[in-house]
Image (cartoon, rainbow, N blue to C red; front, top):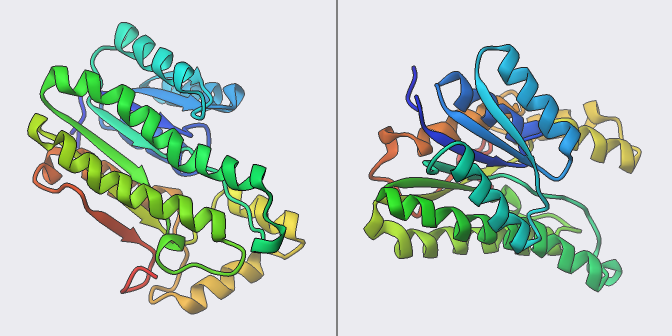
Length: 255
């Protein structure tokens, strides 16, 4: 399928994991993809891989917590590639701290990246979509927003905020034929989850086995599983879906 031929798609956190899988998926379907990441080398590597495979992708080094940098990046995308059809707000961070050890700085950083960053990019990109009288925004929330674990106070709060942001943006922007939805992953096998396991001193295979034990499905999600659902929500196949959260957790109730 080539559902996004000629469309301009912006993916934040596009340098690795779910973001990189989204970049590849949209490029395979004909989109011109802006690969946004704070890690410029990672963004460039993902973009280069897409170009080697015959797609179109341009890397952009952007800190999503800096609203002026976000606005400048969106202006550059529009100037270089054209009006924006799709925004995927994937950039995010993760850490675990019990509440009595959670510092003000760590609390604020989690909100800045995972919630404010999504707002800044949505606010900037919607201007281009309004000009087109059409657009798709897909935000990344998390299973933690509805079924959290110990040590997730700051992460769960930020991701629950993304759910509220999604529904409110859907109401604000719907009259311009802009849909806003969210995808809520559970555990996803990615460089991030391997890094977190290594940092905690726990063999990743042990974590993976425990996640499979909890799931209804006999596996953990891969980044491509999320990219498939995100591309659906960004396509005309989902043109009458807005303000929704689609859970991609391998569990019947999402949590």
